[in-house]
Image 1 (cartoon, rainbow, N blue to C red):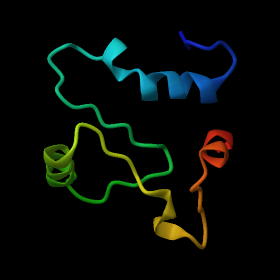
Image 2: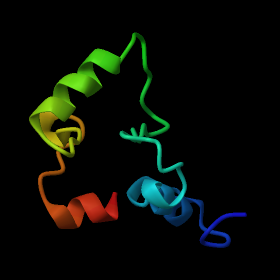
Image 3: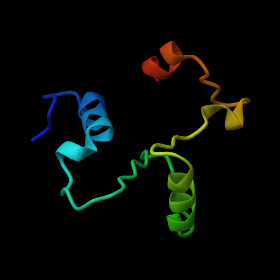
Length: 79
């Protein structure tokens, strides 16, 4: 059952920002991967490397500034 009835976008965000409410306590790391991302090779090294630097990591939306520049929290919210 979706957490937000008739709203797939908001339901998706619910799982995205609250993984600790849905995953077993034994999980040390959760990775949210958006549906428009293709994983073409093993990402374990990337994840482990980022987690050595911080407790949380996220994608830098400004990497592709010609297509999808969202460096404003209000624009990110609307996206």
